[in-house]
Amino acid sequence: MTITRQHVAGKIAAYLRHEIALPDLVDWSEQTLMEGEFDERESELLARVVARLGVADVRAFGLAWEDCEEILAELGFVPRVELVAA
Image (cartoon, rainbow, N blue to C red; front, top):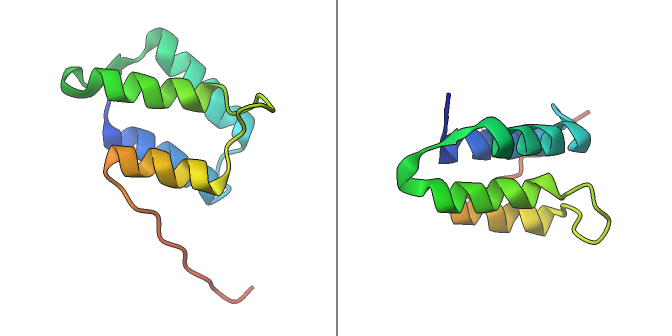
C-alpha cells in the first residue's frame, strides 16, 4: 500500500481520538519507515513526518498537541476539537 498524506493524518487523528495508543503509533511509524512505500511525489515530506512520529516514545521528543498540530499543518490538515457531554 502506498502511504499518502491522508494515511499519515488518519493515524495521527486516530491517536488524538484515543483509538490507538502512542506505542501503536510509534510501531506503525517504525514499520512504515522500514517497509512502507511513500507516495513518490511527497516521499521526502512523508518520510520526515513518519520518522518524527517514530521517536515520539522517547522522552526528549514526545508528542504534544502542538506537535500534532504542526505535523498536520505540514500535511495540509487542521485539527478541530469538538466537545460532547460524557
